[in-house]
Length: 372
Ligand SMILES: *Cc1c(COP(=O)(O)O)cnc(C)c1O
Image (cartoon, rainbow, N blue to C red):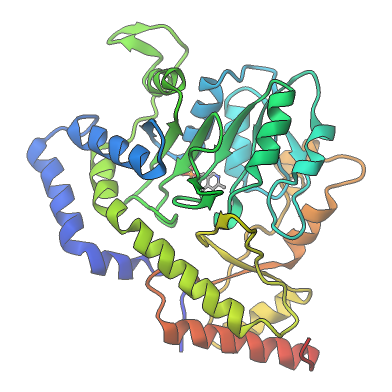
C-alpha cells in the first residue's frame, strides 16, 4: 500500500461542489479584493476562535509580522521565540524590524520552554512569540505571566494550531494577538496563500487593518508605514466554505494520532506528549527516533512517505548562523536530528493508518530487535 504524506486531492474531491460554488459567487460579484466574502470570513473565523477580531492578510508570515507591529514592536527591538520553529516565524520577526532571540524548546513537548524564557530577556526585548508547534499550544499561562512581569507583549504563532485548545480556550485568544496561516497544507487551508491576525484588542485589530493596506486610515490618507498584504476575496470565500468542516477534520486528525499512539506504544520510539488541559490538533504527528534515516528508508520501501519538521534548528541555517550562541541550543539541535513526521490528515483511512503503524513497528523492531 502506498500512503502519501498528504493528499489534498482527497479534500478537493470531498468538497468540490462547495468550493466551486464559493468561487463562482466571487465571479458573480466581480469584486476580487475586500467585500462581503472577506468580512464574512473574518467574522466567522474570529467567532470560531472565540476572539473579537480577525484581520485577513496575504500569508501566515505576514500575519505574524503585522501582528508584531500592531502590538508595538519596533525597529531594533528583540523578539524571543523557539529555536526549533520554522523559518517563517523568524522572517516575520525580522520583517517587523526586530532581532529574533532564540530559546531552547521543552524536550518532551517540543514547544517553547517557559523556564528558559527569563534568561533570554534583555532591556531591548519587546515581545515573545510562542509557536504552537505541530498543533499543540505552548504553555501560555507561564509564558504570559513571565511576559507581563517584564512588560512584554505576547503574539501566538498559531499557524499550526487552528482549533487547538489550552485550558478550554482556543489558540488565537491566549495572548495579545495571534497569527494564523491558511497555507494549503495547514489544518484550515486556502487555495493558495492566506493568513489572519486574530485579537481581542480593537486597537490592535485596527492597526493591523491599516498596516495591511498602506497604513491608510481612510482612502489615500496613510498614517502608518504600511504595505500591501490583503486576503483575496476568492480565498476568503474558499475559507468560509471550509471552516464548517474544521472541527470534524481536527477530530479525525486526533483519531489517527490515537491509533498511532496505541499501535506504537511498546516500541522504541518517542511519541508526542499531549499535556493535560491541552487539546492537540495534530497538524503534524511527530515521532522521535535515534536511527531516523534508517527508519525513513524502511518506511519508504514499504510505500510510506514521511517528512522532517524540521531538519535544522533555526541557528543551523546558513542565513541565521548569527543567532547561534556558544553553548548552542541542545534540545533544538537534538530534535532536528531525531524528529520524523508520519502521514496524519483527516482523509487518511483507518486501513492506511494501520498500514503506516505496522510499517513503523516492523521497521523499528527489525532495527532494535526488542520491545521496550
Ligand atoms: C506555515 C507557518 C508559518 C508561515 O505561514 P505562511 O502562510 O506559509 O507564510 C509560520 N509559522 C509556522 C509555525 C508555520 O507552520
